Length: 254
Ligand SMILES: NC(=O)c1ccc[n+]([C@@H]2O[C@H](COP(=O)([O-])OP(=O)(O)OC[C@H]3O[C@@H](n4cnc5c(N)ncnc54)[C@H](OP(=O)(O)O)[C@@H]3O)[C@@H](O)[C@H]2O)c1
Image 1 (spheres, rainbow, N blue to C red):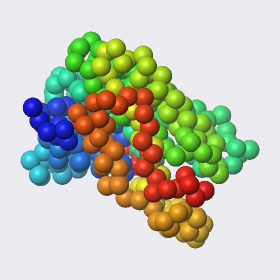
Image 2: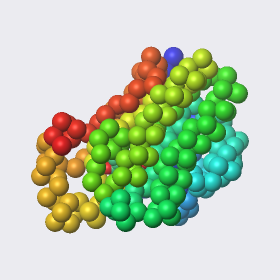
Image 3: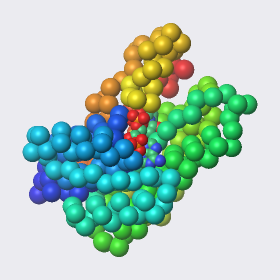
């Protein structure tokens, strides 16, 4: 039997793997021994990630996936399972942010954000859940929510709504799929510097915002590794429907 924090020989799929957290999660999972199906829209970024993983003798393959299109999710999962074997862990991570006052938000902004963060996350989980149930050996689905799921953040109304939905979806699917041994949990990160926010945090308003954080700093993707590995491996076998907040105390300070 493998030690709890290993994923030797298992196949995992990461959505939004082309940058930021998803890219880092893919590296971490590959280093733990998993075969990683890296999925997103930007093929060039995925190809360089696969190269980087292969450079340390890890195993990864890239699959094109647009989470706002259910047939694209389904095709990518099927292709990944054909190439790498049945998937036991989904990191449901793809997401975007639209930062605007609510009075400036357009229906197009709303649809773009919800189609990606809410509908996209839901159908990535559902398409994966269907296959995990059919294979009969269970699995772990890790949804990437946000502290925005817990408390409202300025100029991010639709983002906050979408992440609250991901958070509650986690509990709803955990209840529905417990009998199939499919665990569904979430990680709610605080601010971690990625493509999504690097420009903002480098700006004077971003720097001023950081001063309001309890420990006056933004995180790095590695800060989420503990929660990721707990939920992905046997170490988290007795957990389902949970949301792990990893925010450096942000929630307490704001
Ligand atoms: N960074 C933070 O502080 C923070 C905090 C809390 C939660 N989060 C959440 O963490 C997740 C990752 O964000 P990040 O910070 O790593 O941002 P990022 O660097 O901008 O990465 C977002 C990823 O999502 C993918 N994506 C976007 N739209 C997609 C679509 N329609 N189909 C497939 N993939 C799509 C992008 O890939 P392509 O463009 O190549 O498709 C990219 O790989 C998001 O769900 C975000 O809400 C981030």
